[in-house]
Image 1: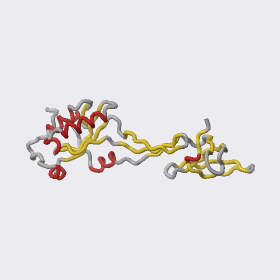
Image 2 (image 1 turned 30 degrees about the vertical axis):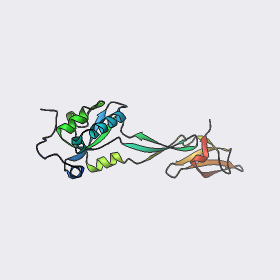
Image 3 (image 1 turned 180 degrees about the vertical axis):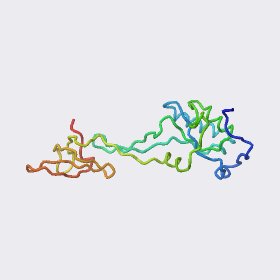
Image 4 (image 1 turned 60 degrees about the vertical axis):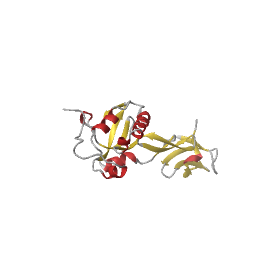
Length: 195
């Protein structure tokens, strides 16, 4: 049995991008890459598609799923992006022998996700979930940790973290005022870990 999928004679190839968008064979597939090769594979594939009029109507999109991550580092909110699925590149294409060959033989690609490296198209729901992951928030502050208030009325006071709400950017701390312990909600940027 051949490793090359599909029967290219079933339907003719689209002659334009508009025809390709309407083609029922157009799906998202996942290519596996060597670790750290995702960006190289993305760039190489895009250049290969740009240099071939035929491939422009077969391979319509190539992406690396990334997620925006908001972290609190040293009391400052920092946005970064990270690869959600390291070693994977998503390819939206019409499956033909040529499109399969181009992706499969791109330097850094080890194969497709599927049995015996024969790709399985993703459902629309799975593709959208992979391409649009929910943003994630992180903090270098943990519950129970001692932190110092660096802004506001309590500036300079050391307090203990009781709760963290990253979605709202708030932290609840335990403060001792006038001999009594009380909880206070502060902006997460207004505290930093005690070093």
